[in-house]
Amino acid sequence: MTEKDAQFLDFLVKSLVDYPNDVKITRTVDEMGVLLMLDVNAADMGKIIGREGNTAKAIRTLLRIVGMKNNSRVNLKISEPVGSAPKESKVNKTVDEAMADLNL
Image (cartoon, rainbow, N blue to C red; front, side, top):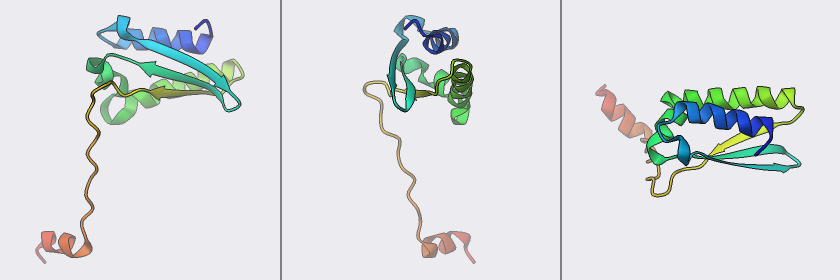
């Protein structure tokens, strides 16, 4: 993990979380560029994702800038913690159900 992109991510994430010792970064390189896999403590996921994903988007933007300075394409994948519940999908209503809700 001596590459600048991984070092930057390590510094940034450890500055945000409550459990910096649980931060693990795995770096892989292939024909698509650099992939950084981020594992954090389950209690810190909200801090990394942020409200509506804004913190994660900002981290990804900063990593792309670091990548551009080093002539590489950098992508970030945030691993879900073990035991996390899958997000419930929203159920789409039929047109008739939606019209009934409007009480027209």
